Image 1 (cartoon, rainbow, N blue to C red):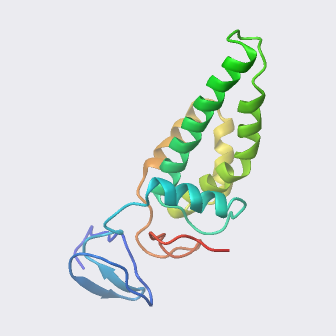
Image 2 (image 1 turned 30 degrees about the vertical axis):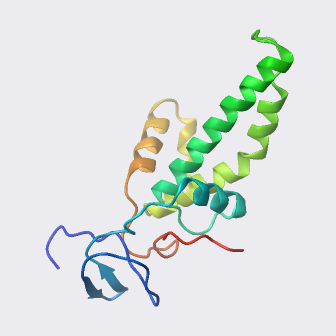
Length: 166
């Protein structure tokens, strides 16, 4: 391989739709085109995270994490609007639906965040760095935007477009 070359997808024991040529490696077949040619869809991401809501093992791709983030943002906005219509627009008015939603997605959000850290080769305990004001949040944001490791790591195989079934 060429110096500095970092493949994005490793397929071990099965084939997935890929474009480009493949090269052999100790981990299996590495497509030249990198990770899967298409990212996980919005619906697949939400289904995968909610199905695997307490699964802290394995890895989550960038698309899985960010699509779920967008889904929770949209859901929180909608419940906030419903709360405002039902209970009032003032700051002191209750927001029961929004709190219920936030409580319902707490574990899935933590699980996908830990799996996203696993994808870049970091322990899930690094999530606690968020308690350091500003610096911790910025570091986590950079890590969540970073492309995952292209080969299987200590946390599992490279995430693909397939859904996790428990």
